[in-house]
Every structure is written in C-alpha cells, then in structure tokens.
Amino acid sequence: METVVSGIRPTGNLHLGNYFGAVRNFLKMQADYNCYFFIADWHSLTTHPKPGDLHNNVRQVLAEYLACGIDPEKATIFIQSDVKEIAEFYLLMNMNAYLGELYRTTSFKDKARQQPENVNAGLLTYPVLMATDIIIHKANKVPVGKDQEQNLEMARKFARRFNNMYGDIFPEPKPFTFDGADLIKVPGLDGSGKMGKSEGNGVFLVDEDKVIRKKVMRAVTDSGPTEENQEKAEAVQNLFTLMKIVSQPDVLAHYETVYNNCSIRYGDMKKQLAEDIIGFVAPVRERILDIYNNEAYLHQVASMGAEKARESASKTLKEVQSLIGFRSF
Image (cartoon, rainbow, N blue to C red; front, side, top):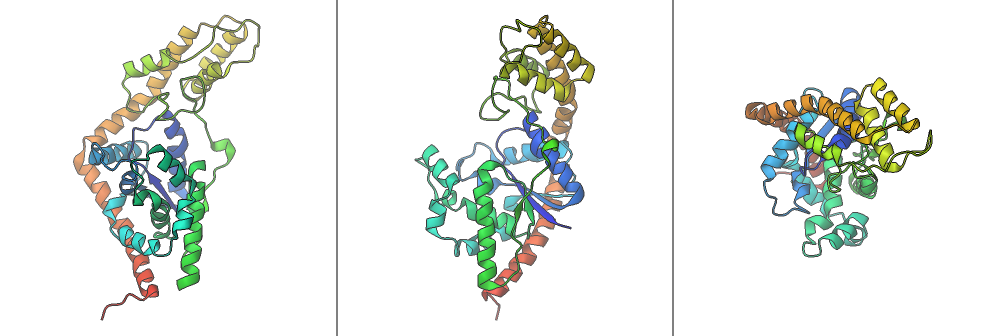
C-alpha cells in the first residue's frame, strides 16, 4: 500500500472551503492509502514565533479534523513535535541542503517580504523540514497546493541527493492529485475568489447560527436581473454555488427559476441559504465541541498517533544513521 503524508497548520478554524477541499480528500485517502496526517506545530513557528496559544490551536485543529471524519484507526494523525526523530533527521538533511537553493525558493522570498523583521533560519530551511516530514515516512504521494509545489519538488531533490550519496532507500514523492470532477471550489461571501481564512469571507465550522446568518446576509450581490435568463454576475453565482453545495436540489431549482424570470428576491435567497448552511454546519460544530472538551479522548488519539508515527520515523532514522556511518561502540 502506498504511503501518503500531509501536514496541517494549527492556524485558524476550518471553513466550508477546507471541508469540501482538504478534508474530503483526506477522507478518501485514508480509505485507500497508508496515511500520515500531522499537525505542523514546528512549522507554524516560522511565521508565528510567539503564538498566542499554540497548545489550544493544536487542540482545536485536532478536534476539528476528528469531528470531520479523520479516523485514527485508519490513518495516523499526530502532532509533529511529538515525534522527536523528525528533529534529528531534519538536522541531518540540513547538512545536504545548500544556501543558494534555499534562498531561491519562492516561499522563502515571499515570506521574507511579508515579515522583514522576522527572516529566521527556520523560514529559510522550511523546505528541508517539509522534506523531512515527507521522507521520514518514505511517502510515495503528497497532496499539495500550488503554493507548495516548489517545496515538494525540493523534497524530491533531497530524496534523490540522499539516495545518490548514501544508497537508494527513499522513493521520490509525487504530488497527489484528484480527478477534477471530485473537486469542489467553495466561493467566498465577498463576491470574488474562493473561501479563505485571511480574506474574511468564510463560514467556519464552529460558527454559531447567528454568526452564520449575519455573514450570509452581508454577502455581496447585485441589483438583480433585468432580462430573462440573464448571465449571473460572479457574486450572485457564488451564492448559487454555495446553495448547490448545501441545499436540496428543489430549493436550488426554485431560485434558479425565479432568477431566470427576474422575480428573485436576494434577501429571501440569503435567508434560505443561511438556514441550509446552518443545517449542514450545526452537527459538525457539535461534534467539534464534544471532542474538544473530551481531553481524555484527545490524549488517547495524540498518544496513539505519536506511537505509530515514531515507529515509522525511528525505523527510517536508524537506517539513515547506519548509512551515514553513525554507529555505537
């Protein structure tokens, strides 16, 4: 069975876009692959060296992914800092990573511009730590977004470099891709683009009902159609796309009809959409809160995940140590 590795940053809550994107993909992967999903708390320090509450951020993310269906019996879900072997392998990997190639990475240059007062060594060697997370479990595939494609290519380069220097033990990880028909792009409420954390245009899985209603009622629209079967503006199409995701087909059909005959009332549509989003989100939110408040269960999941991840990482690290020449007398 092929191995898949993917990191989860402990920053912010999951929104509908995350749920229909990364989370749904994780659920598909855990059924068919040997999956390692880790909460990247070390990675988060490259941009947030003084996090407000790192532990609770990790706890929140863990609770959310478990509530959405990640099964710790099927997949290995763990916290990065619980697997100390990663830190040692990261040190060894840094010995074969070169300053020139690290300085040239797009992610480093972008972050250095964004945070000129915090251009730290961890930021520079971020691709090395990412490669370590992947290679230490001998991953075959890695789900990545466009912004991480270069870093994955560097992980492939580091795997090749190690194999050439010490012996052929690492597969070159490939990007995990899903069929386009399986992907759902969830739009934001601001009239353009996709739903995101930093854009402030999202509905989060932990949002209370009143918060969801307020967000949806503020969603951008236009003044309404003036001709039958008129093409929808992007902002209006976004609402129909959201309705397609969370509403019943007959509800969507009704609003398509009243739009096409120019009798639509966006206020009514927003009220309906808000209630349908609430109907979708509410049970997930309750599961998140139940798990978040169940400290014993979270401890059990984190401990089990750390044990499974350390077993895999320790085996690889011992191989690496032996190949490099580290042996006890």
